[in-house]
Image (tube, rainbow, N blue to C red; front, side, top):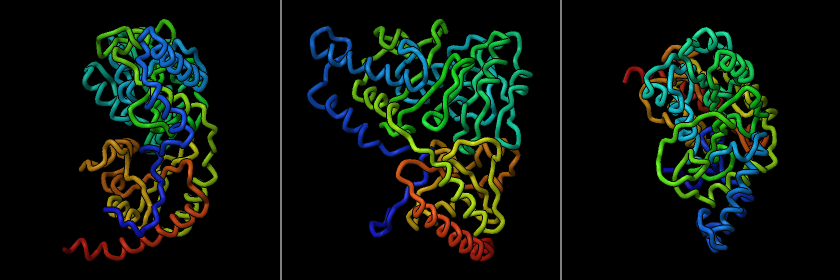
Length: 371
């Protein structure tokens, strides 16, 4: 139970983001009086259709594509699943993808998992080496959700398509933080709740001419890719979120990282390759990550020990063990992800809280071990 007297500070934006006030204001009319079905031909329906298509144009502008290439989904997981199950043949993906890709690829069955480098990035050479004559899809995330490391999707996409395979990238953690190069990308997933929109809405970019196999059936909604009456309020919210002006939080991330490294002994940054500007994943030797998470939570700071969808898992992060960390090292790691609303004062207070928590946990660790 959260203590009401403790001031709260949120540093877990890779898990989810607060809905922006502008987004709430834009979507609210479509939860009230403007409730028409976008497939209806009367005035209320046509007003809803116009709002839906306006949102589609906003998402297209954000991605740098045609509105005809935007399919609204329920979120990143559905978008990823649509991409994976559109492959009739062999799939190549990385071993540190989000579970939305890993689980779908395992269910698909015909898949090769490629290991990343120790820096947390997946190389185009390693992907190309895994491509076979029957490979029809390569899927590599743009940004890793736990490390923040950036993959060169232009090079990976070019290598994939040179062998006749479609290229999909899970862009859920990249959208809003990096430019999105679609030149060699056939399919690209985004999720609204990582972009200051509500949960339950996302989109899949589908290059014109690329075949996508529907996963649900009914009406001819969303270009025939996704049956079901569209949620106009959520689509409008995603469109509004895509149109937001965004600040770069890199300076604050760097200050947080430098402060922890300076004030806490025996810590290491995991994944030192190119990263998005809001994320750092730090390993605390001789500290249990879950204990650190709880200690910080009690001090008013929301952070993460890994992917939110894997919270409570007994096994250590597959991403951290995938880059060569031991199970103990993986379990000693914490992810800090910044976003709108974080300030320099909050970062300074977080550094102090981390230092105090680490010192306390290390001090009591020997006693805990003998209980």
